[in-house]
Image (cartoon, rainbow, N blue to C red; front, side, top):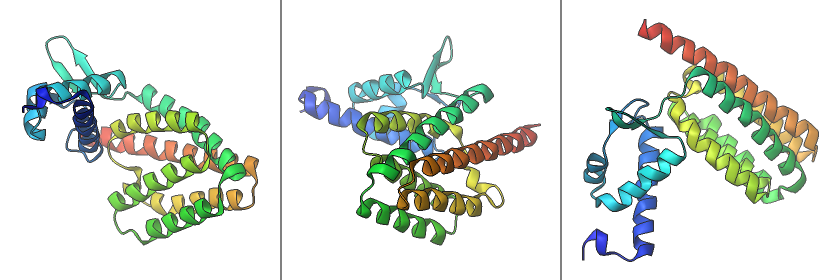
Length: 224
């Protein structure tokens, strides 16, 4: 039986696999913003038929992760400066709300998990590892908020964030700064202080925004 003969549930499963693999390729830098892609090439690399790949690419285009231009076809989307600033502005709103709700609703087990994630983050020795543990921390924080609609919004935003490129943890001292910023959020959650948790999270994202601007400046300098 060929892939195109599979039942709908199996097709959706393969489409989801294709979607997640393309996301991983963008996140890990194997597919960079501006990189041209074709349905045929992706299907060949994933060893899938074109049908699930087509569904995955359509979903990625709707999410704004793939753009299509006349004569150039599909390519991984690029974020301009204004789009990056808007993305971080939305992060301030969503992450501060998640922290505020976590201070109200997080279980003891979830708070314990946040602390354990931070231990792994502090033990990490590379920017890539730190970035991965940072993503896990923010995912855990989102779940600790116990709001399915907020979680959906955060997941959508984080898909867009993979277009940002290099991690800001490559900047000097940024990884160390994040330790204190995350600890401030956790401590406010432990104290069950929603307002302080929201303020700590907003401060953290604004500092991340500053780091992103600095990194973008370095990348522009390297291109000149």
